[in-house]
Image (cartoon, rainbow, N blue to C red; front, side, top):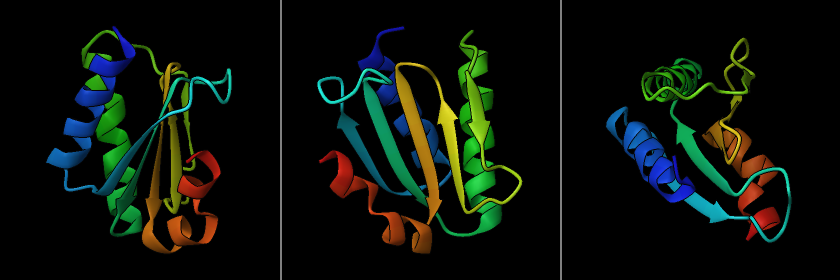
Length: 105
């Protein structure tokens, strides 16, 4: 699946489960780790975990095999790795603390 199509699919998944402040960055020229980074906010520990689980479930339903997800046990910041696309699902306080947008923008 092309990166842009996958990005739109994941953004819709996040939006449908009420993820907040969705931001997308094309970082293909800045790193060789991934092409696109998506950052969004979950309103609670449970919400962060639910968004992440839904991303994993929906991506698997497309036949994708996620490389992994880190942070599910804590639920403050979960990273979902889909290869060409990496998603950071963060609680509001954690997102404000780390300011990933400033790093990649």
